[in-house]
Amino acid sequence: MGKKPQVLFATFEAVPFMKTGGLGDIAGALPQAIRDAGYDIRVMLPKFMTIPEAYKNQMVHVVDFRVNLGWRNLFCGIEKLVYKGITFYFVDNEYYFMRDKAYGYFDDGERIAFFSKAVVESLQYLPDFQCDILHCNDWHTALSPVFLREFYQGLPLYENVKTVFTVHNLKFQGQMSDYVLGDVLGLANIPAAADQLRSDRDSINFMKGALSYSDVLTTVSPTYAQEIKTPFYGENMDDIFRRRENVLYGILNGIDTQEYDPENDKYIQTNFNLEDMSGKAECKAAVQKELGLEISRNTPLVTMIGRLTEQKGMELLQRVIGEMLEHNIQIAVLGTGDKQYEDMLRYYAWKYEGRMSASITFNEPLSHRLYAGADMLLMPSLFEPCGLSQMIAMRYGTMPIVRETGGLRDSVIPYNQYTGEGTGFSFANYNAHEMMFTVFNAADIYTSQPEVWQQLMENAMHQDFSWDRAAKEYCKIYDMLHPENETESEEADE
Ligand code: ADP
Image 1 (cartoon, rainbow, N blue to C red):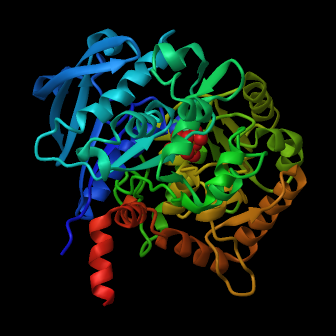
Image 2: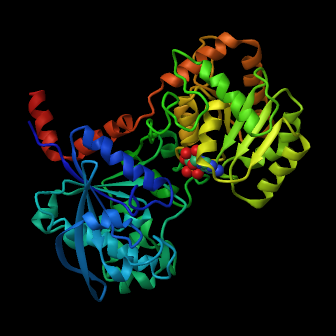
Image 3: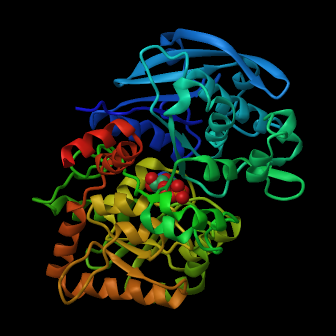
């Protein structure tokens, strides 16, 4: 038997140590699932000042060394903590990381370059760990594959290290003045590197480096992996994604199926499951009451939960919300975002009191009550790399109504009236009336074909959105990159 590859997962955020967005959740959950699949995966992140003391007190010093960064020669310590069976390494440098926040400093480029270099340098110092796969995430670790190839390639220990780079958020790419290229990265005199990092005459782009240098690229859904090869979705990187499409994979994220579990959810009125759905009706009545909506079992309750931005399709809602509220439906929105949309929603909640509610706040318990109590979740996104809300809704038997883009397209099977298949409803074009008629169609089925609706709820609740499914796909990529397993399968073929 060949040995399973050992993986170092480099990230700027991981729950419970640091979280500013989805990356933190993913880096907290995915390595666990990969570990459960039998891989030795360890996570590396900066030792931020804001990590809770209880964790900091448990960290033990592993090693320290110096890191060269341009003309600088910097201290780097590595500390270690085993959390839920996973080894986390923390990169210690007080000058860069003893600060209040993870990002938002004038020298973010330098801090992030330091972290990326420290990750690569550390590979030779970690006891009982021979890194086979370096898995980097987003622009904060995008320089690691570049440094690995340009500065470490010749050293025997690094020869077989393969790199995977996952794009979680294509909007943030690390665009810097090209002064950084020489002064910080020390790459100005390596023409191939300079060429690949440069985005225009005066600037360089960290993510561009990872997209060119990594052995495999992944993003967070199969459809988004296709979409980013087009100028509309590609954020000026579409040409690179087209060039590297043979190594570009889309793997749908998972959700925390323990946190979002209608059977055990502590926030909701009555727990329910596939065998006994009666609790869902109670959840609906409770949330209607809580939000000041008319308590009516037969009126379809449509919810929207998320950021109130153009990306999430608020433009479409704004266009037709008045028309929609004349129909026999209720709308409950929970979210914060652009002021124009917040005000618009408040206005309609006032105008259609009892039919529409607008909760302009971030409220996790209320989000659970809406996922559980609503009949449908509307998510008409302009673009959606993965999206979590639609998967959470399905766990609670709430039918997603989505635009066919990115992860929405990959996670929702549209209702087919001829076969009865489906886990939700979808529409193709970014068009307000197309969205509205899809909602009306769903509402009609809800009110006039309860047995069809019941079947759709069951289909949705049967879907597997656990991280285990995603982990299996990442493991396939690790195996593909790892030569030992190649040998093994060649032997097996003979
Ligand atoms: P995003 O693009 O914002 O990451 P996702 O659908 O991937 O969108 O994830 C959004 C997550 O944040 C979901 O778990 C959703 O329930 C939660 N969320 C968003 N807005 C709110 C809010 N106002 N209150 C509570 N939870 C929210």
